[in-house]
Image (spheres, rainbow, N blue to C red):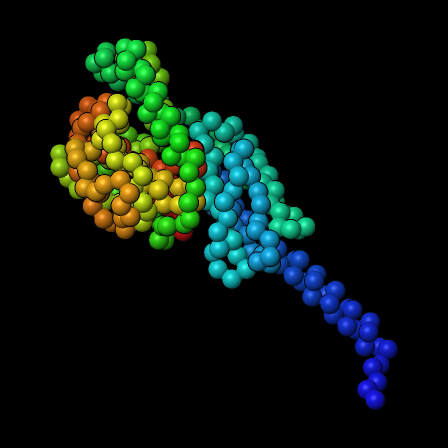
Length: 283
């Protein structure tokens, strides 16, 4: 006959309680970086996850999309778009019944302002052109709403290593009338210079747009897209899966452009984020 000491029961209960407490204490969340400017991306990282429940959270009305980042770890790529007000924000993260929060601070940022002079027909649109622009805006919005599995491979790269001529968030006053906020960066380039894919993904758009000219969009999965505008011509086609560094197009001056350059943009879900800050993320 096997005899179990009565002392073993409370010891066993105590051990289980301690194990649960250690597991619960291991549940930790963080935001990287913790201080950002409007339009900056950041990462929410959750460690000590149980792999039973997927972490759930949202920020600025957008649901965070988590993916594995190692053993007992999940991460989500997030963004504070250009209209997010300065302040301190708490991001509540839940995993089953466990809850925690991360905190980020959005700094006050005053954008630089430049004045541009463009042909009137590129600024004041006739009804036909206005209808075209509206169709293209709706087309792009439908792309940002599509979410697929992760396709990117590590951190992102700039598609060209040339000088940046116009920064993200720049406030442009066109013909002393129209105000436009630059939602990407402009990279200097010569006509026909190679443009490379920032990361692995699927080409979901390769078409001529009114403002962007020859525009190519790559979906990298999880609501992340890169945008390449004003191309002279395309180096790939819609539907093709490209690898990081593949030639996808060539510098041009199509669309609303004053000279050869590449407009490079990054979307996280439907928010425009600073491409320079985005490639600094350790993905």
